[in-house]
Figure 1 (cartoon, one colour):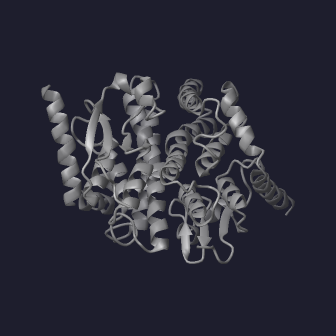
Figure 2 (cartoon, each protein chain N blue to C red):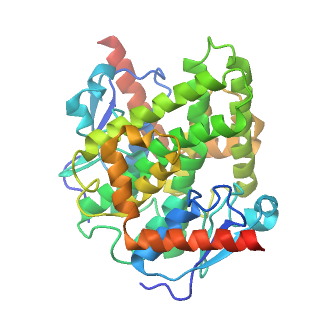
Figure 3 (cartoon, rainbow over the protein chains, first blue to last red):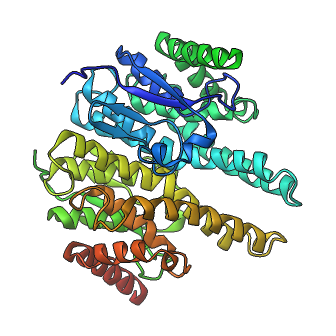
Length: 220
Length: 220
C-alpha cells in the first residue's frame, strides 16, 4: 500500500526545546524521512492544544498528531509503526525480527521514556520544592538503571537487533531527551549508539526541518 | 499464520498483588484467552528475575516474557500485538481501524500507565519521605488529568473505537492498576468501562488462572 497525499503532522508553534529536536514530532519527522515520505506540518499553540478542535485529534491535548487521509493517530509509537508498515526500510521482513523491532519500540516508549520524562517533571515543576535535590538524584538513578540494562543488551553491536529499525529510531529519539543531563555520557556505548543514529542522512533532514521551522517561527 | 506449540509466559513466582491480577502477565493471559490460544506459565522468583538467564529474555529484569518457538518478546505491548496479529478477534480488519486500535495500545502503555506506576512508586518507595502526602496529591492529580481526558473521549460508548479491541484490553488492564485507589470511582463511565471488560469470559478465565496459580504457590 502507498500513502496518497502528504500526511500532516502537528508540531509546537514554538518548541520549548529551542530547536534542539527534542519534542515528539522529531521521531515522526525522522521516520518519514527514513522512508522518503514527504509530509506537511501544522503548528499548534500551547493554548490551542487544549481546545476541542485539537483534542478531537489528540484526546490528551499534546503534539504530535498525524493525519493521513481519513486516518488520524496521536501516539508516536502508533504513528511510526503505521509509517513503517506502509513503507520498506524500518521493519525487517522476517516475522520474528519484525516482532522484536516492535518490541523495542514499546520498550523505548513504555520502559525507558517514562523515567526520562519523570526527570523533566522534577526539573521543570519541582525545582522550588524542598525535595528537589533528593528526588532528582532518585530519578536519575532510576534512569541509570535503565541505561545500564540497555547498554548491557546492546553490547558492542551497532543496533539493538540486526539492522537499524524503527526500534532503534524510537530508542534513540527517547535517549536524545537526556541531552544536557550528562547521563548518557556515563554509558559510552549508548552515547556512540545515539551519535551513530544522528549521523544518518534521514535524521539530519528531519533535524534541519524542525530547526528551520523553529527559526522561522522565532522570526515571525 | 497459526502458532504451533504453546507459547510460554513467565510470571511472578509469588505475585505482590496477592492474586488480584494486577501484574503485567494478566494482560498477556487475557489476550491469549480472548483468541483461544493455550499457553504455559513458568514462575520466576524476584531474585531470578535479575539473573543473566532471565535477563537474556528480559534485559530490564522484569516479567512477563513471552517465548513462542524461536521468538522471544518482553514488552506486553509487543506481546499482545503479536498475539492479536496472529489470531482474529483483537484487531479490526479495516486498515484504519486497525491502526487506531494499536494507537490505543500505545496510549495505554505510554501515556496512561506511567502516571499510574508513578503513584505506586510514591506509595511503596516514598512513604517515609517528608514529601509523601504532597507528592501523592500531585501524582493523583496527574492521573485525574489522564482519566478526565480518557472519559471525555470514551463518552457513552462501550469501547474506545467500535468493537472491543486490543486497545481496550490494554487500556482496561492499565486502569485496573488503580484498584483500591478510589480514583477510578471518580469517573463513573470509566469504572463501568472496566467492569464491562471484566465481565468478558476471557477476562474471567485469565483472572481465575492467575488466581489459581497464586493460591497454589501460596500452598507450596
